[in-house]
Amino acid sequence: PHPPPRYALTPRTMAANRHTTIAAALLLFAACVAGGVSAYNGIGDRVEHTFLKFDALPLSQSEAEGAGWTATGGCIHGRGTPYVQATPTSHHPLTAYYTAGGQLSAVSLAVFGDVMPALVEGGWFEPRDTESHTIALGFREPSGVCSGSTYAEPVGDRVVANPGRLGFNIPLTRSDALGRGFFTGGCIGGMGVHHSLDLNSPGRPTWNASSLMPFTPMYDETSGHINAVLFQTSVLQQGIPVVGDYEGPFINSLLAYNYCSDSCADALAKSVGTGHLWNTMHFLFHDHSLNKCSDHCPFGNTP
Image (spheres, rainbow, N blue to C red):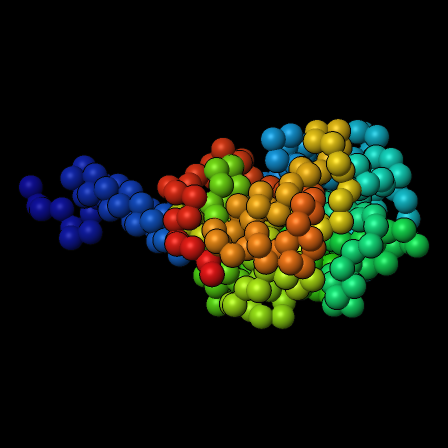
């Protein structure tokens, strides 16, 4: 019999091809992990808020309406159509936004009381009425949310502070965050590695509450992909734990635990006062149980 053609698929070559394909797939996966590429389509597959409660926002307008959320107005450029479960209060401050195509596009919080004037002037807190401000996170391309566009990603492909106005793009990877002057903080299981930005001194934290960016992104320790975003407010919203959507209240030293810095708590006290209380709220973009830490400060301490 004649020998098989050079490129014929014999049982032996088929087995070799399978092994080569599997090896290539494993190498690609390893490269993605090393490079901080997300295993998700976009930033994640959910938006859960409030650590330990993990309440999920509806991912579609129809799901929101079925759960009792109601629209409060028309489509807002960069954010979408606002929906609430009830009139926002200091304990329950959330508004969810949906694209004209019915997909979750943003979330905002109503923040009551006198927020830091510098953060209002910088566009981080937007006046809402005489007693409160709004701060928002957007997840979709701003120009498309009111146009009827549909998106492949279940949540979105970006994280933007106050889309349509301030439009600050929060880094999606740890390497990008470091390149833009964010400083590395603590890793907490279920959350990730905290990274914060001093708006007046990128890369050189002063721990002054008036220049601390209100959003703290968290990244996976291994892949470097964004896991979650923490909102922190120096204006007390919820004084009793568990009764509402906020976490806390936290004294300065407990907030400083996020940052792996020996000077943070004292510096915060100088800017807001000793014994000051903070509230926080986490927004998580995938299964929190996947967020692992090898150590509280795996990348060392921040000044």
